[in-house]
Image (tube, rainbow, N blue to C red; front, side):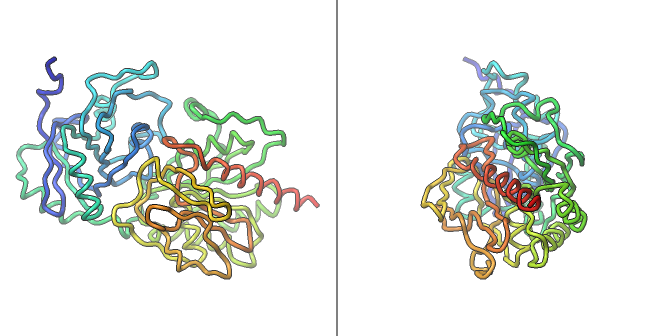
Length: 399
């Protein structure tokens, strides 16, 4: 059978270490796009559309290690934000046509509409091994044949690293106010709950929140109110003390957590000893921001954790959870104040901190993604724990 993609234009990915990978361009081809960003890889074998629309991937060229991508097409449901977030996509083989009853389109056209360039025919195994060895690094991706390899490599070497970049303001775009079940927002959730108790209102700090997080909260009886990453901590405390809200959630997001100074300052106001003990739950970037607000430090991982089979141990039970992860920074466990905080989860691949809690108030966070999408559902109990803490707080206030 003739390869339907054989006549596509050539494309290249040049890395700051001097390596150049060649392939065939797809998506937003022929537009002279020269995209520079950090190059990272994800090892999940499913859920590519969720990955492409995850705001945590902003500012990154994503390499997918699964050998065939695009075989299930795209649809309006399997999205985690309102648009494609990645800077570029690199795959081994682009499927010739989608084959799924849920598909409403195909991947190349989807990226073309989003203005994102893709590259297939690349030895993604070799590329992934290189990133694992040398670390995530800047790269430049293009289908412009007029640029030499040397010019692309030189440009890649001038691309800023992810360290020090505050990308939250570029991706936090959910309208403030009540988050409901508009088209696509309530679909695709594996859990079906009918809460016995009445609804509770929680604030969700949008640092680039994935939709499935919000679905999990609403499925457990939460009325979710979106607030911006620059939210007013004093107003949140006032509303909590008045019984208008039961807790606060801090979302995932991209970039260097230490650069998101405004959100850290707001969270620091909520976790100081004299503040009311408001239940707070953080995921991924939210985990890092809460840790820094509590006095800890973050650092950049060599190549990050990005995949759907990352093993994490729950320290209280010894239970191992298989988790979905997507982050390039982590929290230094030695920087946690033992008088106020303790580790709750540990990543078993490299021993990094995967979760912590404060000892003097119902504040906890995890470095991974219990909402999955894509990934396993081992950690959904964390949403239950947050909702239970919120309800317990309300009951205590009522007494």
